[in-house]
Length: 204
Image (tube, rainbow, N blue to C red; front, top):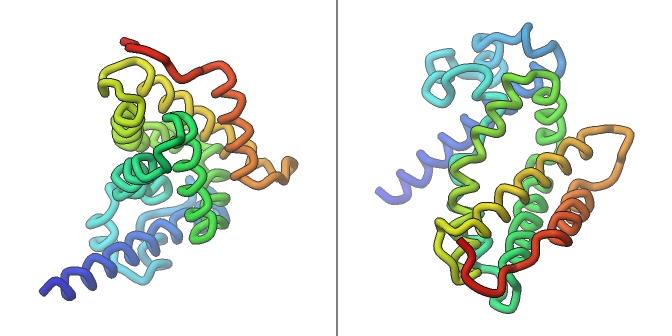
């Protein structure tokens, strides 16, 4: 039974990924406004009915937030070496996540960013989709910092790091820059941390 559930989950992830890849590719090739759910479904080899089992519409298929990202990122932060401060642990966790994502989906990430940047409605969905991950990350940062999850430092650190990530992704998608995403993200976080020191006492 467990094996069947595992296989079913893998097939669901594969279908979700295929639909998202089709949505991004078609939007990049033909323009977001000229792509329909029917087009996406056909390209992924499924029916429109199946499409709506995974996404509410083509916007969601293009943005396609990873439902497992929040829990995975929390684990990454908490699993960093104990000697790292909360900011360094968050930076390392983000770096690990980026490296893994680039290895698996680097080209698709780049196409998605170029599509999203051209349409404000998609950009708004990207920002909204990161809220759960930010909450999980703030909880993990608070735990490493010995603070409450309601304190300002963990929430501010994670929100600022999220902004740094968005800037790094935007620069990376600019073909004139040419620097790797992990380098851009590291530079953005270093600039951020230069002005956001780890607190030495209670901070509310």
